[in-house]
Amino acid sequence: MFTAEMARQWIKESAKKIESHKEQLTDLDQALGDGDHGLNMTRGFKAAVEQLPEETDEPGKVLKTVGTSLLSKIGGASGPLYGTLFMKAGSQLEGTTVQLSDLSSGLRVGVEGMKKRGKAEREEKTMIDLLEPVIEIMEEKGNELTADQLIDKAKEALEHVKEYEAKKGRAAYYKEKSKGKQDAGAQSSYYLIESLASVLEMDGEA
Amino acid sequence: MVGLVLVSHSPDISKGLKKMLDEAQPKVTVLDAGGTDEGEMGTSAMKIQTAIEKADNGDGVVILVDFGSSVMNAEMAIDFIEDAHSVKIADAPFIEGAYSAVMEAGFGKSLDDVVESAVQAKDTKKVQ
Image (cartoon, rainbow over all chains, first blue to last red; front, side, top):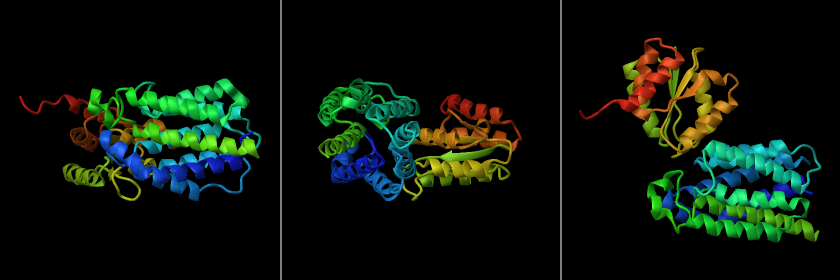
């Protein structure tokens, strides 16, 4: 099951993780981009937490609202990208009874929307390189998915992203010099997945 | 008359360009929608959406963008608008494209003509 409360916890946990890694995200973005990712993401997720619909039992509604908050508050390219992810995923999830397999189908639509919006494919050193492999493992495991499987896949993906040459955004100006450096967007996506895993883990223990 | 929306990461650049275009063709509605909602560096889909609605006098709107999130947020703004076919993003250099576009718009040209003139600004040679 993936409940509205779990969706809210996911976002609250993400906001905490992003805020506590604000400087790291800024440093990564300064090396390859314009250095505003830490600040933008912290502002965006803070707004998303403040605007979380606390009353609803529908996880889809929670995620859609999160998408709108991120879109309007992040400011950088991550705004429309993460905004698209959550809005599209949210609009796929209907009603109050949502399974993990439904969440993975929703996130699949979300990530496809991101790829279209950012005109990005895999191995271009972006958040897609983190999110898509994770969504694949979610699709593969369905309702049997565990927190550890999510984390393991996310860690593995994060290592791969580091080695790619940047093809998108301002990082692309660095060409082969971008190899060996981490992408700020992939790093923030990693925190989102780590947060989702911690919510699944808490649910498993309940 | 076709309206124009200017989207740069820097609110000052959009504002400065609007001033230049207003002097060139005062009759054309030009809206600057650069920067975030808070007026910082960045772009905002909502800000762009509002500007599109204000710039549209019934003949459509051309959006001029700089790069990166400008393009993405302009596309998102168009997604939110009902009459989306009357709004186009010009694949054009920001300043030169906007200047060509405002001239054509001022001459009462169609949406497609205004977009086309902006796109052609790409090929203008600056040094012969």
